[in-house]
Image 1 (tube, helix red, strand yellow):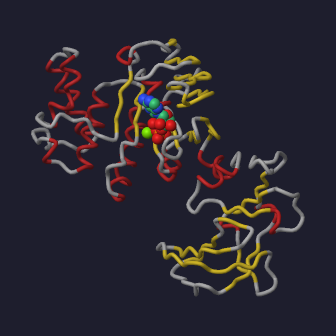
Image 2 (cartoon, rainbow, N blue to C red; image 1 turned 90 degrees about the vertical axis):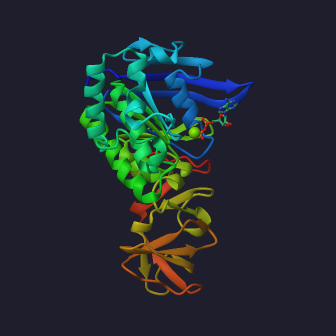
Length: 341
Ligand code: ADP
Ligand code: MG
């Protein structure tokens, strides 16, 4: 790892006929790191990745990779590999042929091709599958082929756009770990697009949360979780997300302020001794915990977590309490107020 950032995106904007794609995108990405671009559908994640890849050209701003200004360079001159949601495998070619396709095009000698193929199949757990066609593989195995293809390309920068979206939950979990391990073992720099906050939070060193073409916050996952810049971040990150209480519901806060609180910081209080009286709306058994959804006229997303199987009767009221030092204070515009721990 060097100290100079490996990838620099500087004040980049992209519009189509005046309609916003992304704007004011500035990122510095160190070599060997894992960065997740996170946000709801349409927020500009893929656009940012495609600008970095050279599949789109920015209207404003600059992009540097490894110290070189690549703002207007062709995709093929940027020395990076890409993995997409659609595996983009050739159906008529075998696993092995798919993986080394790019090497063949670049006329890499056969012996070197074979060595790289073997190593990539080994890393992705695909040894023994080299002669199968994509149609004879499971979704997870196909995604591994796409990963193997990115690995043999041997690039230091790998861009991935929702590579796990087509996989079922269990597989997503295991391939997620594979990708993370691969990235670490190979020391490559990964920029990874996902709308799934769990995926971003569990895989990335740095999470970049976007909304409507703009970055809302970037930093280590725990920063977004513990110090959300605004109410959007607070409600997007975490499972369950942060609850928000308006100052109408709590004494001692200024008009228009919103107070954020996470489920793990809320306790059930004896009747009449809590800070809020809520109605139980649902109980969701999650395995190690039960999530109890709560309704209160001045709050959204309120819930508590009880350990084990602990269903509570819907429609009953309970009192809850929490300490002020667990409250996140946001101003009327939804921005985190300064001077909080
Ligand atoms: P995400 O990947 O976060 O779901 P995108 O980056 O694909 O979002 O899209 C961001 C915005 O840019 C959306 O409003 C989308 O409709 C728009 N957009 C993306 N690509 C194009 C295009 N080729 N032409 C016009 N608008 C586009
Ligand atoms: Mg996208």
